[in-house]
Length: 277
Length: 277
Image (cartoon, rainbow over all chains, first blue to last red; front, top):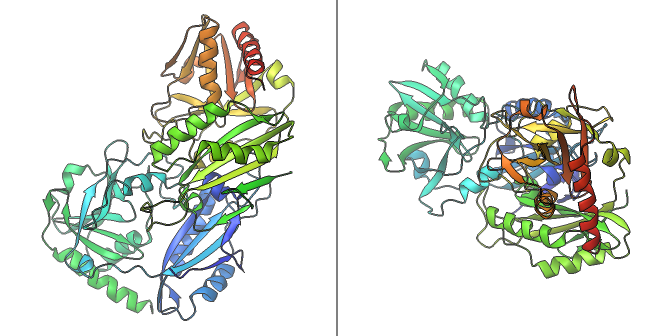
């Protein structure tokens, strides 16, 4: 794995043990697709990062500074992954936030993760995880560093043919995958779980909603129970790196390849090209 | 702040950015009181750490190795704090756990935190936090590194006269303080909130239960709603560093100094002395 890293603008790949990112998971992250030297959906990622900082009351980094640092790492990269971590930095007494926090900016470039081509074409297999997502309005939607639930959920299976795990919340409602958001198609309408109490407000999730609007596909957020999924016409999952993967199987249930998913995949490809990446 | 640090036995105070402790909060910690070169309640802390590692499926560190490393840092320290962090180390693909994890051992020595003497004598003032604890059976009791809820709760007040914040869970049940466990006295019986769905299984909490048994004070874990607290005869909070602090006020409610709390404080002092620390 070829990794390049900048910390507060300096080439380094270690952080202080005292950093609150390690001590408490006190920070946020973004994972961006780098294509031909450009970070895809940069503005959207920066917007989410800044909203997340506001939610956690971490001073948001200067987007221009981040952009310049990202450019240093991504220049000449045909295909790569850029992870940006913002922590509250070191200091404070125990959990108490320091009076003048000095956030830590971590930019990590790693190799592009290749997935089998059929994942995007014929779709992937999902399993329902035992591990639940806990409900917490203060953290819902935020891409924060407290990810033990995802780690435990992902540890439930090792079968390479299972691409993703579906996570329910503590009430048994469907929320998302361990690293993706979920969409259902019902009667040509697009539905995605509400994220009021948990889950990550994915960049591709928002892109999907915009694309649905352009494609004149009705789209909404709803409270979704697991039994509803097996009766959906189509299911698909999204994130910034994978784009759209149709779901061809969830546990014992199979889904045929779906026209709405395919239409949105084409719309996403066109949208990405129009964005110049 | 005088800090000494060992990472995997080597004197260092930085960790790899790729460490899952930073990336996901994928790890655990212990905070120990160091008194005259000894770590108080060492065996209990090691037992909890090992149970926590088991719960998170992190290979537990060799306790003898940890003991030797702790001894290096604590030798000659009259009064200090030792924090031990165990992470799952680096590696794995995204949330997926590496097939042969190499955990990271961090031992951090810091200065003893002085608190006003009256905290232990006449008691402290508590406030009820708005920030709730989310419910998650897989993580309940474990002293893991996902501590954003505590950070947000602690950020709700700055008044130095408020020593601690009381946290309820998502259902509105009383669980604990941001860095302490809570006990109620009702009709000379000791009651502490159940930790089945959230909260940290504190070392001093367990010591309290043992001391209550020795003192022939009935003690049990119960589901507790906030309205019950104001009618309690006594309230106190505990942790490994502070011992026992009587609660003299919770929000608008005052509590008189209580005989059961005082008795347990004396029993704890005697117990600590009998432990040779």
